[in-house]
Length: 105
Image (cartoon, rainbow, N blue to C red; front, side, top):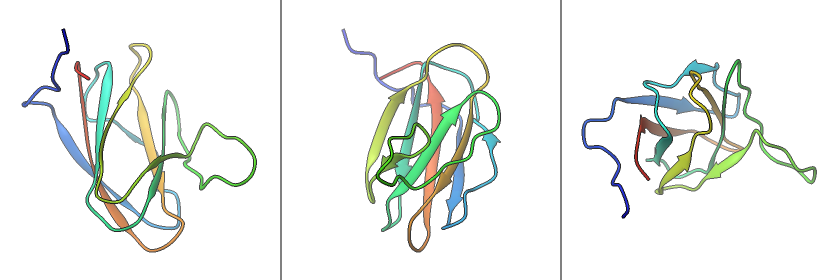
């Protein structure tokens, strides 16, 4: 049975520019993070324990640039129970992300 993402999940915004955003704690703990990109540019996010620095991917594989396409709503699994942090960057322009954490999928 699929569990829906909770309607009462805490949400925060992340302003994204061509300079990586400061690493910030996610608004809550849970097993998944929902990211809504409300802008017209792709955001690259890094989520993990400790300080995060998102980067725009190049030809070398990295773990700090998960793409969130413009106008999309994605849900990603969060491993572990430690407090997670987020950072985001865009290759061009700006965008805004809405970020929520919960126990859903």
